[in-house]
Length: 346
Ligand code: TXA
Ligand code: MG
Picture 1 (tube, rainbow, N blue to C red):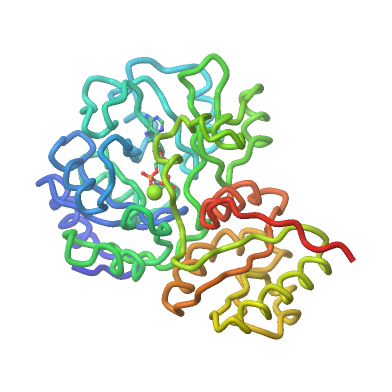
Picture 2 (cartoon, rainbow, N blue to C red; picture 1 turned 120 degrees about the horizontal axis):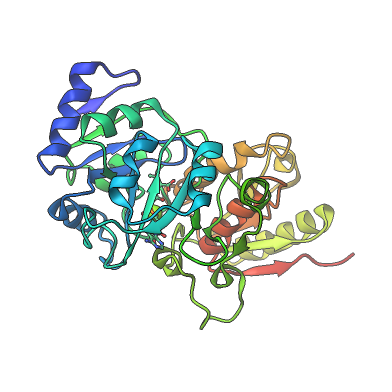
């Protein structure tokens, strides 16, 4: 079944029925496409892991359609949870809370905490309601590939392995939700997203960033199990070049020329502002620095495009923009396997 934008009630009821029977339906959210299954059904969760090829110790996010649905799946509710929900739900924020008994351990990867979010997308909310109120939804990609931001990405990865895809067009934000853990003394961000530290601090005061996300020491593990895996990576060797704009351009052009001389196919990841500055290789603009969300929105599509184009090396500018730059750079660094070089000085 393939549903188009503004899908009608009968089709939505059918999709809900698939979920209630334990099947899998991929759906759009404001961040990326999710792979939905009934979060309270351990067999549905097992199917999700198997369709994605995902390790089963990597917990799933439970998607809900109303705040009233929350108490039934958590064992207690920290005061900050209510404040954050009021401020950001529906929206790109996932909260880690103490797990309620109704949520099977299969859904939480064996953990006694549960991740919950209410997505800001009408099709997602309608599907959650039609499916019984609790939809487990990891990103709808094969484990290790970039998250899908279009229905066609979902089909590339999971076509034939799932029961239905709801096509809601391209997703607006393009990087996964911010995850904040409210089971610690001080709330901790386990995954950066569109909702950044500053926005969280305005609502709940003190917030920390998980040390595992920023430390150079590989023995300091991120707390979100999913953040430890190699992820989002294109098949090509990817390097991020940081520094002053002119130096970055000169350095990338030097490296690209060297690679091309050695017979390698080269791509450059830049923005509209830089696209004219690279005479060699496949030049891809991810968005515009004048509207930073366009960079987040097209990041994964660009990474998938490099695979299709079959390039051997990718040189990327850094996109450390004010609001969503932290989230974008977190994904870009993973895609590059943390290979960052400083641009040549003049
Ligand atoms: O924007 C999003 O959050 C998307 C859309 C579909 O909602 N979903 C998504 O799910 O990104 P997924 O499964 O690809 O990423 C969930 C992340 C993983 O890194 C996982 O380890 C972490 O959340 N996580 C889930 N439950 C957790 C828990 N109880 N404690 C710590 N981390 C948890
Ligand atoms: Mg994912």
